[in-house]
Structures are given as C-alpha cells and as structure tokens.
Amino acid sequence: MNQPTPEQPADIVARLRATFRTGRTKPVEWRTTQLRRLREMLTEHGTDLAAALHADLGKSSTEAYRTEIDFVIREIDHTLDHLEDWLRVESAPVPAHLGADATAWTQYDPLGVVLVIAPWNYPAQLLLAPVVGALASGNAVVVKPSEMAPATSAVLARLLPAFLDTEAFAVVEGGIPETTALLAERFDHIFYTGNGTVGRIVMRAAAEHLTPVTLELGGKSPAFVDRDADLPVVADRLARGKFLNAGQTCVAPDYVLTDPETAAALEPLFRKAVEAVYGSDASASGEFGRIVNERHFDRLSGLLDSGRVVVGGASDRATKYIAPTVLADVDPASPVMQEEIFGPILPIVTVPDLDAAIDFINDRDKPLALYVFTASQDTRDRLAAETSSGGLGYGLPLAHLTVSDLPFGGVGASGMGNYHGRYSIETFSHRKAVLDKPLG
Ligand code: NAD
Image 1 (cartoon, rainbow, N blue to C red):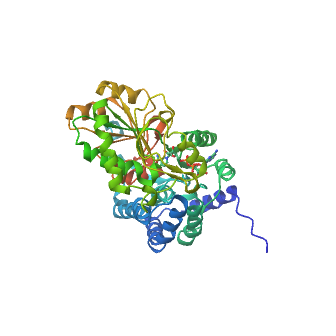
Image 2 (image 1 turned 120 degrees about the horizontal axis):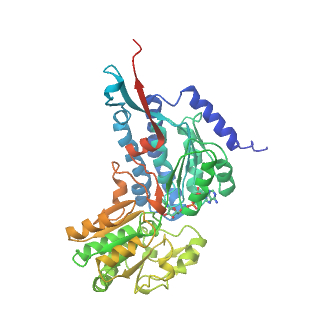
Image 3 (image 1 turned 180 degrees about the vertical axis):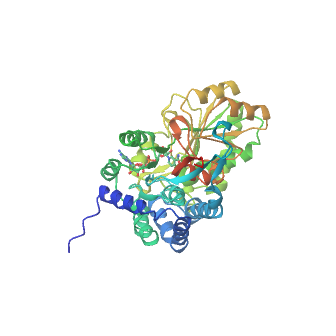
C-alpha cells in the first residue's frame, strides 16, 4: 500500500491559520485544556520519552525525568496556576488632554501561528517548554524536533498529535530540507533553540516576512572562582553542573577562570568530586551520558589535548564515551578555548586577578550564563556590574533556569528574547495598547 503523502508546510500553515482565524485557540479554556492534555501525555508516556532519551543520549531515567519530563510538568503547573493573572488587562493612566472620561489599557493578544524549532541536547524539554508558552498564549503551533535525536523526535511526533488539538497543532519531523521548507512560510513568531550559525539562517528567513524571532543560542559560559571561595563545594557543584548530560548543556559552565594558586588547589578537588559523582570509571556509571553522534565525538576528542589532564581524558568511539575530563594549564589560544565545548571537558584558564578576569570575559562574545564563586560582596558586585551575560549564577551553575519566575535567554551572541513562566506569555503574545474615549 502506498504511504499517504505527508502534508506540505504551506498546507499545514494555511490549515492552522484558518483555525486560528475562527478564534478557536483564544479562549483561556482551550489553552488550559491543551496544557492539561500535554501534562497527561507526559505522565502517561513519561517512560516512552525516557526510553527515547536513553536511546538518543544515554540519559539515565533519573536525569530524563529531572531535566526534561518533570521540568516541563512543573512549567505546565506553574502556568496553569498563574495564567489568568498573567493575562489580566492592565490599565494605564491617561493624560489630562484626553479628558477625564478616557481610559486606556493593555491586553495580551495571541500572535497567530508560531514555529518552534528545537535542538537535540534536551530534545523534549527544549521543544515542549516553549510549546507550553505558545499554547498558553492562545497560538496555533508548528513544532520541528531535532533530527539528531531521532528516537525522541519519533516519540514526540507520535504522541503530541494524539493529545493536542490537531486543528491547531502540528509536528514536522526532519532535518535541513524540511526546516528550510518550513522557514519559507510566513509565521507570526519563530522560536529557535540551537547554534548561532543556524540562528542566523533562521533570522534571515524570518526577515523576509518581518517575523519576530526568539533565538536561544549558546556560547562559552565562564565560571569565575575566587580564592576565598569554599573550594570543595565549588568543585562539587561545578562537576555536577558541567558533566550533566555529558556536558551537552547550553548553560553548562564551559571553562573555569581563576588565579594560578586557586587552580592548583582545585585540581585534587575536581578528582574527588568526579569520583564522588560517577565513581572511578564513569563509563560504568549508569548516570553518565554519551555524546550524541560520531561527528561531535570526533570534534571533542580533538580537544582533549588542549591542556594537562587532571581528571579523565579517556574516550571510546564505539560507545561515543568521553570521560568527565578536567584540563589544567590551558592556553586561551588553544582549540578548546575557541568554540563552545558542548561536551564533558572542563578547561581551567588562569588570570592574575579580578580585573584580568573581567577583561577576559568582556573580550569574548557575551555568554549565555556567568557563574561566580566568591565570598566577597565587592567581587560579586563588580562581576554583575561590569560584565554582560544572559543569566548570572552565584554559587550554583545551571539552576537559574529552573526558576520559573526568571526569564531564560541570552544576550548578544548567546541569543535574543527569553521565556519561561510569564516571560513566555510576553514572548508569544502581542501586548496591544487600547484607548477608549466615549463618544457622548
Ligand atoms: P541541532 O543541530 O539539533 O539544530 C537545532 C535545530 O536547527 C534542529 O531542529 C535542526 O534541524 C535545525 N537546523 C540545523 N541546520 C539547519 C539549517 N541549515 N537550516 C535550518 N535549520 C537547521 O542543535 P545544535 O545547534 O547543534 O544545538 C547545540 C547548540 O544549541 C549549542 O550551541 C547550544 O549552546 C545551543 N543551545 C542553546 C540553548 C538555549 O536554551 N539557549 C539550549 C540548548 C542548546
């Protein structure tokens, strides 16, 4: 029997746009129903998703739930709890020349048909968390999962249409040709997570239709460690944050920036921390993930000799395993410092003092996150005031993105726009200005 021809991007967008124009997606009740259905999908089929995440990235079930499935459930619950409040019209004071009977307010309008393009590293979370905001804002949504996480893409393509309103929601699977075809269509917003090179392609395509974009990109997020910090705690928290998902996390601490004495003191502490989390052989730990594919494995293997190996250094192409690795004596000109690492390699770069550290950060692209470990209020204040980054974490890497009431996004080369919680409503809605002057 012949397979039915898949619906073409132009037809999908036209169909969803027709639905949007009927007003079907606008009532809050439709939105909350979609969110509840998405929640049901995650609770009923969490194990299917966890198995797919294991197949794609070797993620343990604990990690799959913590960083993807339960993460999205929390985002849904938070949105359901606050949505009516977030959508409330806000009145604005009216200037005297318009008369005492005039009133003004802002209201949130859905944008229309929006496109969400997701990457492979948290292939469920980074597709579904934007979808929560897009649906909560009353939009019709097209999603494009990453072809580089094929098992997760297949599960999402099977489950999402079974749970969500397919008159207003569609999944398009595929890689570059399919994404290129989608990008030729006119959307009312494009939400892209991934690398900056493709980010530019997305923005160029969006410009043709004057479509606004959110770009959630990456970059080299520094971890500044001051000599007065509690170093055993720092090493432990950095190791846990860096090696989660085998370092394939957009907000992972990319490198450590510290003075030479502190660098030396950190070396044995990193050895201890890695062993405490993954045992003496991380390849035997069920908690340590694998590199997504051979191309990234080869890229990362080429970075292992950018410094002196303090911990790890081992790799195995057959299983796409790269050990949790810490490198010392790393030259800022070495390959590992030229691009976002996006793998389990943590270089330690030394600078003489705080001024040099601030210059080091400001000489490079604005990072997605900056992490600061210090006991000094003055050092905290200076780094906050004198550097720019998407987010700033004192004392703990990664965790700021789990705070639903904080906007998550980059600045400069690490992206534009943000989301999570009420910031997703801002992203996926138009804040319409309304003036009402009675005729009488
Ligand atoms: P990826 O290769 O899966 O690409 C992302 C998406 O872009 C995919 O859906 C893919 O199909 C599509 N794509 C790829 N090439 C394309 C092309 N030429 N034209 C159109 N579409 C194309 O993921 P990636 O980019 O390798 O992801 C890793 C990067 O993403 C890292 O830089 C990381 O820091 C960043 N990232 C950022 C965040 C964030 O929230 N800011 C989260 C995760 C990852």
